[in-house]
Length: 476
Image 1 (tube, rainbow, N blue to C red):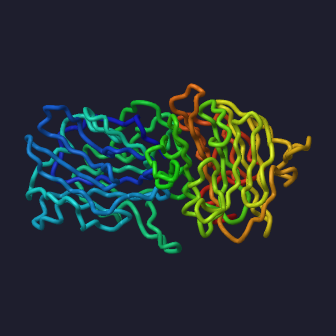
Image 2 (image 1 turned 90 degrees about the vertical axis):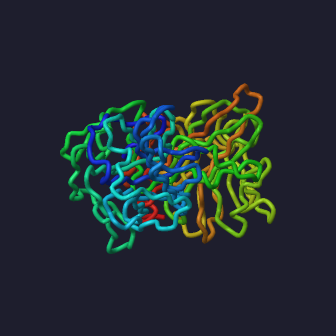
Image 3 (image 1 turned 90 degrees about the horizontal axis):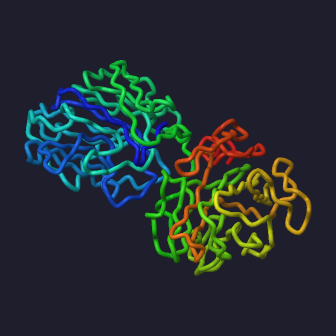
């Protein structure tokens, strides 16, 4: 699995079939950007007469546009949006301008289903040569000249030159779950310029597995990711980022692993997955020094009557009132005497030692007991003593937790809060690793797997589990 942000893959293609081709990829739309996110495009310059792209537009609709000889020949924008930051989507752009029926000349599919409702519907003429597959540079994840990048995750990317393939070539419905899934070894004729990018070679993300030897050059820094369509990891949800109760979803970055605190503003970001049972481990890296007493926080929150309002907190995450949201437990690591707060009756206790920029906070949540949950925190490989004791926390033994609390018969979610004060930082990140093995663009150094052998963490997980779909299905 490869990630694409300001990095991209590129190759100058030979002049080939501009009437018939197929582009297929899996993607996870984790970022937020008020601009087009390019999936596949040819080079563009200010005086370019011929350019084309397939992309996500600024409102998360699929968009394909082609110009030839300075004239627009195709412009298709789906009505459906890809808003779910939790999900992997399978996308197919299918081109065959030789078709007599206009609607069959260019088709767009999401998870095996053709999109027929379009917000923009400019169809090309029959037998029109479009602008992709020309003898110019083409890029995955960027359009040359426009600096429009893709900020999410990509997997199993195909380009078939000279073939118009239905999505059933690349995917199929799982007979057990009913979900659309990838065919890992599809039967495809790739043609002169075709390629199949698996992103499985960490030292060469542009390696072509089609048999056509159409390797692509890499530009920028790439990182192999554990998040795949078959095992979906929690990310920070760009649809659940809030500042003082107001949506601020443009503060999710680094393919969902970071939330950005902006000067003078406090905000909180929820993760995409929740759990009900089991033992869960995650890590948070602090991107800046911040001594504000209560607005840099690592939180768990309980789904409940007021869950949708749990960000409206002022200075405390998850106050359990009709105005301010559901129950939450909050750890504030960057105060001089860090606080662990349970606003549902547990009160506030001092816990641990003050954390600074680049420190990694270890987090362990035990929901395996029928009625009682436990929560531990630590720093840089050492678990904190239980509050007001010299007894070291030990999640693997289930002892000396930071807090024990009433679990309830509901789901618990994960979140982080960030703000900037007068510590001299204009902006600061909080990075979260739910098992994807990175903090932003930086891979963890130690790559410790969880109790199921899944994921990658900086520190040992004490037998607890990464927050991902496989583990939740088994343990959560």
